[in-house]
Image (cartoon, rainbow, N blue to C red; front, side, top):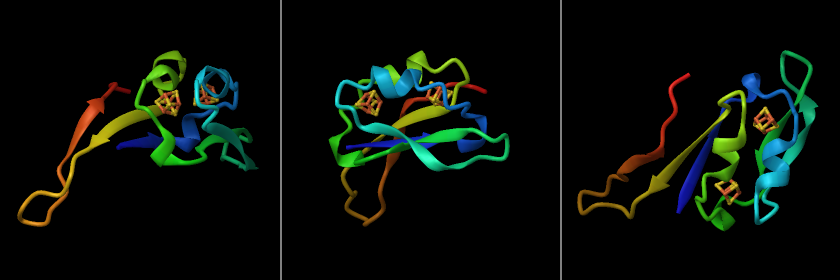
Length: 87
Ligand code: SF4
Ligand code: SF4
């Protein structure tokens, strides 16, 4: 399973990632960020294949994708970064 971390304040609502997602799993918000742009939201994280296409096409480095690993024996979840882009 994958987790998207979206920096809403960096998003300018250009929709490049929305068009790029093969599962059509991204949309623009109805509300605005502080810069007056609609920002992206994921519809259903469980449906994300982790293909990274949205993160790679975004010119503003808004999206980071992490792979979620099953809970370890001590009960803690270990989240290792799948894609980590420096801002
Ligand atoms: S990682 Fe792939 S499937 Fe998941 S939201 Fe981004 S483009 Fe869509
Ligand atoms: S996340 Fe990036 S590619 Fe997607 S709408 Fe925002 S600025 Fe555009």
